[in-house]
Image (cartoon, one colour):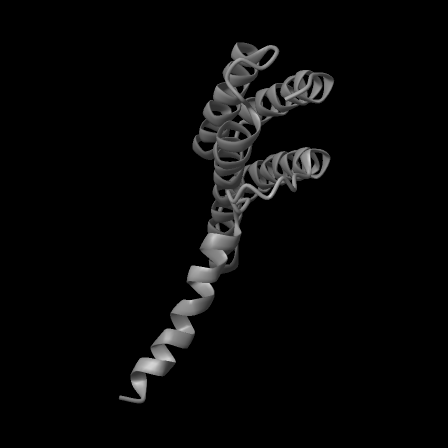
Length: 150
């Protein structure tokens, strides 16, 4: 019986972390668009660095256990940041901020689609091209999004 409270304490942080990762989706009206773009840009920088580190480590002739462990960590990190971009694009921008009928609605939705696709491609590759395009799409979306009313 003592195991049940211990198990609950172990699971609670996982559940709390999962639910706190996206904006609340309660009609609170509290948004941080500039902050959100800063976070997206930081995620892209992290993906780019992770890709470079994976390429550098994997180019070694022989890999030590430490090298293999670092490859796994950089890969997991890269995928996590790419998934966060996908989640934020869908949960913050598509679900809450982009309203049908708004100025340049189709362009904004199309750019968000590209952001999601190139985030996925960043997970699948380390060549840097996908992350570069992802950065360009985020910059284009930021320009059109911050220039128009929602």
